[in-house]
Length: 102
Image (cartoon, rainbow, N blue to C red; front, side, top):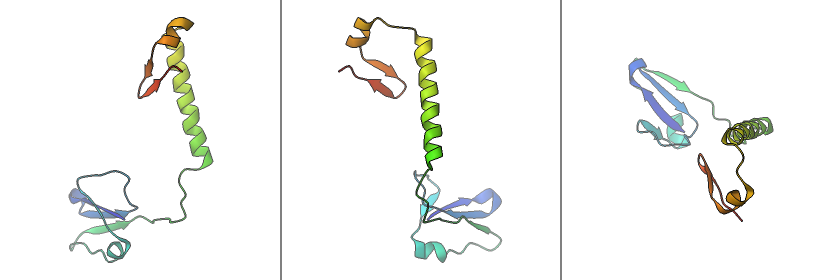
């Protein structure tokens, strides 16, 4: 579990294990997460951790794939058409993806 404090609201949030590092977040084992206490006057928000969650659904993955295809087709159409000889000999770079000629 990951514990995050919001000092302005006097709130502690305990939720699923974070996927990225944050300076004011603390990872706790299950035992310490269940035994968490906060200072007087503070609130605790405990987000449920669903252990049966297997990640994104098939619909989520298809939506991401469609968005990537749409963004890629807009980028290609705005660049124009290269000649096949120059396309075969040059490396193309689009964002973080790189096309390597075979």
